[in-house]
Length: 105
Image (spheres, rainbow, N blue to C red):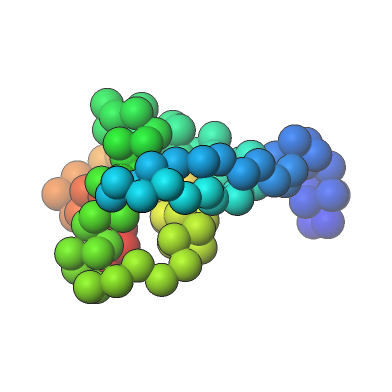
C-alpha cells in the first residue's frame, strides 16, 4: 500500500501559491499542484475560468454559511469530493447528485 503513496510524482505534492481576486479583494492561496490541477479540471467542466469558478464557489459558501472559514481547506475538500464522485460510473449518479458548486453544503 505504501508503494502507491510513496511513488506518486513529486510535482503533485509540491505547493504553489497563486494570487487571486475574489469578491474584489486580492488574496493568495497555497495548494499542492494536484489540487490546482483538479480545480482547473472542475472549472473547465463547468465552462469557467479557474478564477470565475473560485469566485462562484466562494460566493456560494458565503451565501450559505454567512462566512468562509479556511477557503484553502474548503478547496482541498472540494477536490476530494469531486474525485470520489468521478470514480463512480455516471449512471449511478443520474438524478441523485447536487451540482458540483453545491459541494460546500
